[in-house]
Each structure stands twice: as structure tokens, then as C-alpha cells.
Amino acid sequence: MDKAILTCALNGVLTNPKQHPVPVSAAEMAASARDAYNAGASIMHIHFRRQEDNLGHMPSWDPAVAKACSDAIREACPGVIINQTTGIFGPDVSGPIACIDAIEPEIAALNAGSLNYLKLRKDGTWAWPPMLFDNPVEKVDKMLKAMQRVGTVPEFECFDVGIVRSIELYLKSGMTDSAQYNFVMGVASGMPVDNDLLELLLRYKDQESVWQCTLIGRAEIWPTHQKTADLGGMLRTGVEDTFYLPNGDRTTGNGQLIEALAACARNAGREVASPAEARTMLGMAAA
Image (cartoon, rainbow, N blue to C red; front, side, top):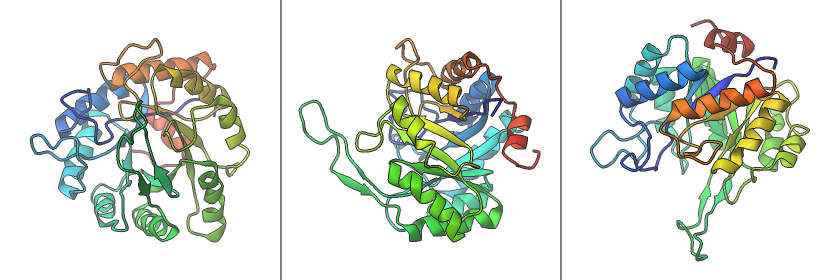
């Protein structure tokens, strides 16, 4: 891509909003999205959080919450592209599907395979009990059918090389007729943030499909953001993925992170795509 499409990973879940600059309410999400939009983000990847006091770190699958948040973002950011999470543990996908039906996002992030989700503390104890992030084919297929019903494009989140290779099987089997790849790097039990690995991954994706990286970590992720820009990928960051700027300082919010991401694009000789340009590049209808 000659121009770079920037995605803001607006908030995620589980991080404590009392300790970190993560937006929770519709108004907070709209304000943070506007900062990112002004810095060059055309796509907002959004999670929904519980709105009750002291529960803002927990996920919500209430369609009313989803609609309030997405409506506020769309009003604050004309033409913006909404990318909704669907990540959920267990076989019950009714919550994510209800939110897809409520807001009809242009894109929905879809975990494309299962992963042992692990992390250790410095003392060698588990940071949380070892768990399986279960995404069997039946679950993926249910999500895809819900997306197809409302015209949502799937963005396949890939935590390891085998998941990357699975996407082409989904395409060839007819489960989906389009794909965007998201190489997730930095989860302790998944793919590391590694420039050499990134170049290898591009061999194993469907060559017609667009791609980006989700890079989880601190300041060490920024050279791989630059490599992504150099190789022609879409670019993503936000407080879901990191709280750290390239110089190691903590960010005050999403706007600063997207400004740094835009600098990576320009360092690669690429201008930042506007929302209208991003829609054209991704084959989406005008807002």
C-alpha cells in the first residue's frame, strides 16, 4: 500500500481505568477516539466495558452499551471505520454476535485459532492460572456467518504461524470470501515481536489480502512498527497494546501513540490515509 492505514486499538479490557489511560464510557471512548482520529487513525478497534463503578476493567457484551459507544465514536469522528472485537472465552458467542447485529461494524476482529494463554511473573509463578483461549473452527464459523449477515469484513487475529496458515484454508473452504490478517506479536506464549519473523510470515499469508501487526510490549515494539511500515502493512497501536512511546515515556493516551505510528509511516515514505481513502483501499462503501 502506498498510503498507510492507521488503526487505533482504543481500549481493550482488563486494564484498570483508575491506573491507566483507558477509556470506558461512551463519552470517554469518543474523546479518546477523536484524539486518535486527529492524529491520523481511520479505524477504531473497540472493546466494550462494564459501565458500573469499579467494573470498568471487565468486558461487556450488552448491545445497548455497544451501540452507545459506537454511535458516540462515529459522531465524534466523521467517516471513521469501526472494528469491533469478538474475542471471548468459551463456546457461547451470543454476546459478540448481538453486538455485531446492534452496531454493524465495517470490520470485526476474529481470533482465528486456539492458544495456550500463558504468562509468568519474574519469580517464575503464573501471572494468572494457565488457560486455553479456545477458538475452534465451529466457533470461528459462527462468528463469520454473523459477520456475513451484516456485511462485516473479518480481521483474522493470528497468534502463531499455524493460525496464519489456517486463514488460507478458511478462504479455500468457502468459510469466508475475504480476509484481513493481524499478526499478534508479544503474547508470552505466542509469536514474539521479531522483525525476521515478520518477514517470514508474509510468505504464508494469502497474497491478495491486506495485513497489519498488533505489537504488545513497551518501547521495544517500535522498531517492528517501523518494519511493518517499511514492508507496506497497515499499522495499529493504542492503549490496548502498549502504554509506552518510542522513547520509553508512558503515553498520556491514544493520540500520542497514533502520532508516533504516523511518524513510522512517514519514515517509510508513506502518507497516512484519510478515512475516505482507507475505505476505498479496503473496498468499503463510503460513509
